[in-house]
Length: 235
Figure 1: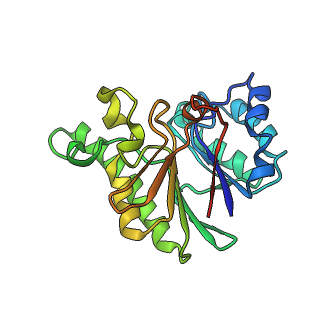
Figure 2: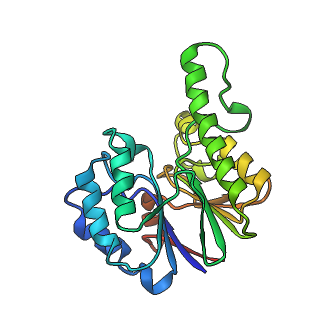
């Protein structure tokens, strides 16, 4: 299976032509398209309508999650319903099997990496923040636990390892992702992980257990030489 993956499209109301140019060649090189969150700029349904107008033209299976930008207007459930209405598979902790490959995904959350990961100690506000990170990891754990396929693809928005965030300002590392996400993948098994969010990060790395991780944020892909609109991996 040839998998095309991209995140951080940040589609706005006036972006119809830009999105068309970025995605129109996907069906020629891939069997399935993964969208790793931040589909819109401000989480507005009218922004997603522009993106959906281009997605339906691709005529290949599409699997998606939401990102932090898609939550900005509090309309995330509306966005999910819109995607589902055009047969885009929205993982949102619900696993999916396609052509013998299992797909699991969550948005993920912040928290930091390794020894720098924030713990639930001190003020209630800190505990609430860490709880949100733990909750996303648990949701991913539940999704992976329901898959029975040997080949497993994990899709998330936030980074699961620090290596693919390298290039971003060190001061914002705790807000780029969480090692809890990669720990779950190492425990339950995954073939490959895709994420976005770190626009100025690095293209690839590996979890401590050796799982390949690809940062497919569109700004990062477009900054490469030659620039590309998505990454294709064959399983």
